[in-house]
Length: 183
Image (cartoon, rainbow, N blue to C red; front, side, top):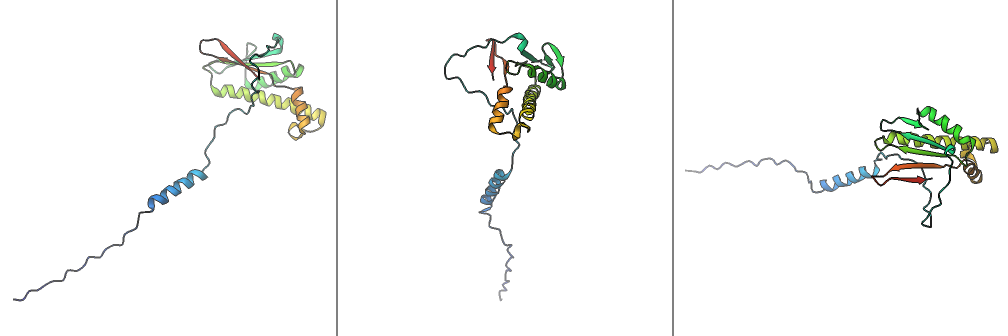
């Protein structure tokens, strides 16, 4: 008898992909997108704090009660100016009228309750900055014929000297009393 041998047919092999560099390419793309993507940044107050004094002691200023505009924010974000409730629109005009009379003597004092929101505090801070910018702008227009932003450095310094920001913030400390920071 004769043996019949059948030829086995070879199965067709599908070509494979070389995936050894896939991880490298993935990480390169990840790094590329992380570097080129702009992330949202939180905005805070644009305020430069005064430099720390070189000596340990600070002289206390004697300020009359009439020269202080007291702004309080309670836990419900209600705004009080010298004990009377007001809103943000009226706060600007009140501050502007208050500062115009004696700009070098007037102080704005802010006290925010520990439970008040940051939004209310920042809105008040922004109003203060807006009022001072407006007063300095008016000063420059009256004396130099152009707005504060377009004045020279010397003119801007003169406007800042005419309307210095004098702000006192009262911060609630734990149980040790209150701390004050003057600007």
